[in-house]
Length: 126
Image (tube, rainbow, N blue to C red; front, side, top):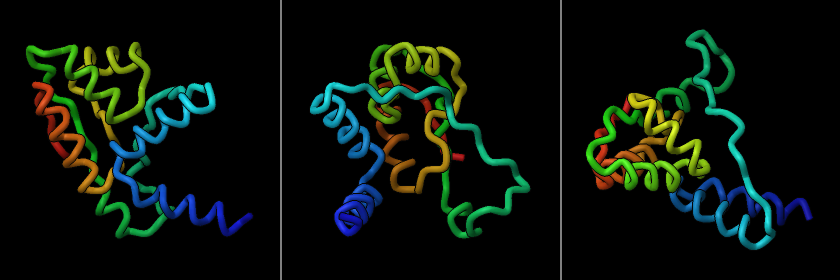
């Protein structure tokens, strides 16, 4: 049983943020449950010594700078990237500039930035 769990965890680690978001939605539909984000995740303090230095240097934040003219499309993009509910995504979009994705690897961050920009928003990596 432990081997199966480890295999599943390894498979999940290899998913992009967008694929993981789709997986969460599929699990919600399959089991009739809802994954709700309680609050945005705060960034770790600068003096934090937990974890290795390589993982910190590779992590990237995606910041929504401006919404643009297509606010509804941007809200949809934020929901797709973060798996937030409609109200939470709307609140995040309306509070721009605001981090949308924190501590992501560069590939996932670039994909999220492209998703936001294709929806009409202005985003940056930090």
